[in-house]
Length: 86
Image 1: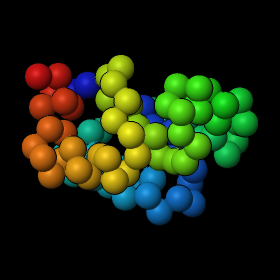
Image 2: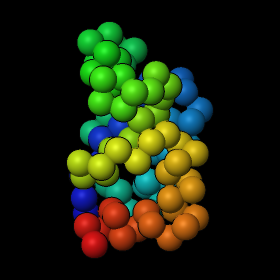
Image 3: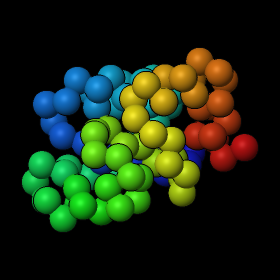
Image 4: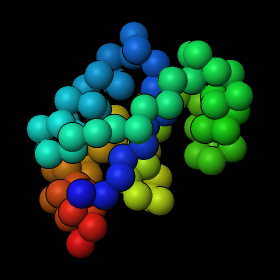
């Protein structure tokens, strides 16, 4: 399975929803970057994505976007192949 990295905070409902969907699709480990603990990580997230909100999700080296983007990718049938590296 392709590596997943998510910039998040523990109290964000969209982060929780995104993690839940990823786990339902078989992701066992998420490299979670907590931007609430390290402001430099927030700056890095903004530099990488141009976005200020969490979650920001990367599958492999590809920026998927936020929770709504992840859900849309799943509904269109693109999430599983991306996770499987197809």
